[in-house]
Amino acid sequence: MTSGSGIWAVVPVKSFSSAKSRLAGILQPVERYQLSRAMMTDVLGVLLASKRFTDTVVVTSDKEVADLAMAAGARVFRESTNQGPARAVTEVAQWLTGKGCQGIVGIMSDLPAISKPEIDKLLTSHGDSPAVTLAPSRDSTGTNAVVCSPPDIIELSFGAGSLSSHLQSAKRHSIEPNIIDLPGLGLDLDQPEDLLDFMKRGLNTHTTRYLRKRGIEKRYSTPNSVLDFDASQLRNG
Image (tube, rainbow, N blue to C red; front, side):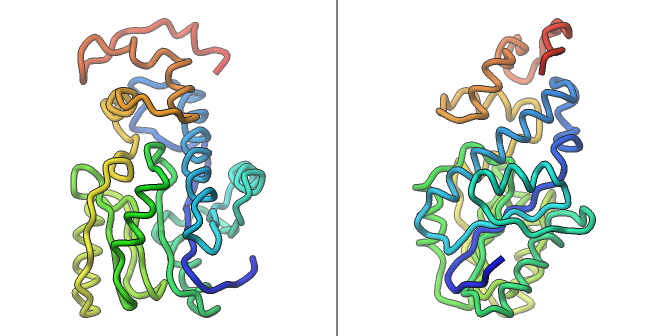
């Protein structure tokens, strides 16, 4: 990767084949694999189309993820092993700090409802360095995106409980974090009900088209209730 000032988008991605295990109750392995590919494609599409970033980098130890990211136009930071999203983003943040980068946005790859206007709001709301901006998950426990300037200003954490961890870390560094709720950034597709909520938005995304092709909405009799479905329909992915 080349260095550069400004704000970089950093996206940690593990292997598609091991992603989204919590959706096993409604999606077969091949479907979870294809869903993960579609979501990353949507996220990278928005980030790469934004004019707000110096560059976009995917952090991964998986060759297929790396190849897809480079084909989309992103840079790739190769991990030797999957160390988890927090460590992945932290390594890039430390590298970019050493290169004089102004800041980073650490953002998850399972947020297919994000949009360029939301990215603009996220960055516009971010204060002057040193500063931290947090975009929570919609249950207000996780962190789906974090803006840090400088890049290594706080210790990073992702997943359940990460919002609280970021708030505590910011406090230790005498930073008053900015918290901004954004509907698209808040919706990560982790649970079966998330799929239905996402489909109701009617967005024109790779993820929407894939889930519609698989008939996801027909697998629900009512919200939060999953229908039985014919497994023979899944054999071709």
